[in-house]
Length: 311
Image (tube, rainbow, N blue to C red; front, side, top):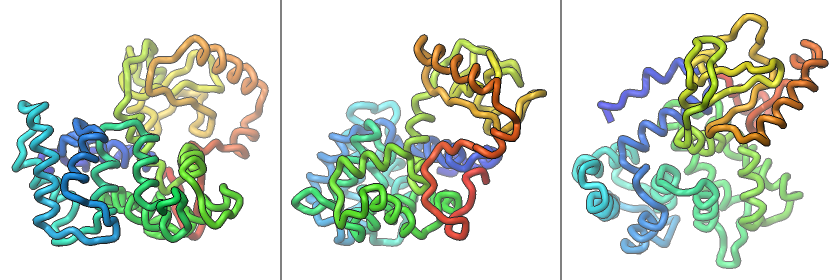
């Protein structure tokens, strides 16, 4: 991983994007962006990794990783160097000699190539009981292991730190304080992008970036490559991801003005919807936007429990 330094991403202003970009770089360095969910599951099943609370020793970890990368090498022999990938993945997982099965699965599945909600379903299933329900303690185990991923990159503070209790509380409050939740409720909560987990959906948006037929109003890049940010305050005002992440603004535009993010080219329906929102916002005052900032995630911490995402 020394060939893929993440220090150059530290100037990205918003922590969820900064973390997601570091993870994308890590994902590609480890070749996990080539690993399908079904292939990952096959390898885990082949090594009989079903007891999620059991520890894995270093030999079990190496054997499972070797199975994963041997299969990837067969499909992508020009991209995958098995000994190197196993060694780097071992470094990422931590050379402590032991890791819980759930922690191992959470790391591999979070960075594999799969639809976001398929990942959510798989991870929920790992902590659910045989009846398909999950209590607060089990959800806490999953969120604890998940938060170790940004923590390892030095990015845990903005996601609520290592304290997962507020996130567990948020999920069960969303479920009207039921003693247990089912997968559908967990998915509904995750779709709100809770603060402790927002880095994962952002990683998926980073991976899906496209080319947009629009010009950045600040640096004049055209077409915009990557994320495109469209103002919902001004007509025909677009910002590229480089300018947005570094906090640059053009004259007359403020950071607290509403923006909409696109990781894929816009449809005609989205263009019409945004036009209507701009019209509505034209009649709103500066004071309104200062008093009604929009969050792109579900906050789950109190002020004392977690930092602001813009750090």
